[in-house]
Image (cartoon, rainbow, N blue to C red; front, side, top):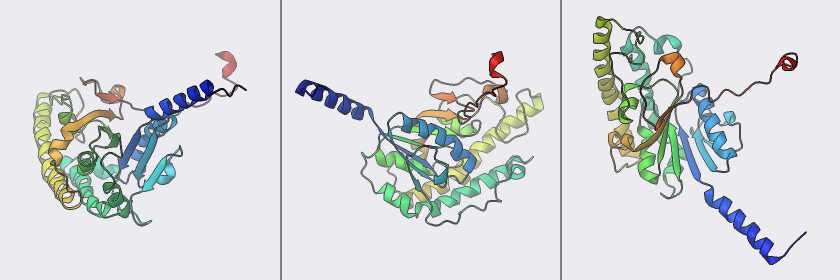
Length: 280
């Protein structure tokens, strides 16, 4: 083996260069939905495999498929959320008001999460700790207070088709003439009366999100996170949005370059049966 000084210098340079490309990435996923976390884990695990320092705050540390650092949000083993609260019936109710009622009632859980030891310790870390923040956009923007705290670029995830408020912040069209408001019973091919109703429900969706989510989320953020910038302004700092859906299921729509559909990202390729392989 050649142990000359030049070889050792080159080896050290390669090592330092590799470490220089490594980023500190924070993932905060506060919604108590295991199906959501399975999707996020596929993304965070790939970042870990590519050599980044990944830290995730979640309610489901057992889901991690890679040995990245994962910290449980809740102080206790008991879930804040009643496991029978979210059902397909109340989230796909014929009444969009009933669906929004169940979804926005979860915003109040942020009060309990904000008092957890793990999130308080996270918020106390130096502002240059992380190079990238990843979190979910769904029923609240409460955790965008972390974006203001750490001064890092922010990548958002949604595990459903775009809500109108998520589309709006990314400059994405949600034209009610052919894009149904999520949680309504409309499809992409609507009659005149359905388009008229869809237009009204689009305005209702914005109003309900502001009244039932933005205002209470801002109150919690002001109390516990001392965010300097209002949440409704922080949302426009979103650098990228991953949408866990596919146009073959929900129809196509115009999307900017920083909004990407990644439906099926969590599905791992399965091995073909031995009986089939010889015919390929």
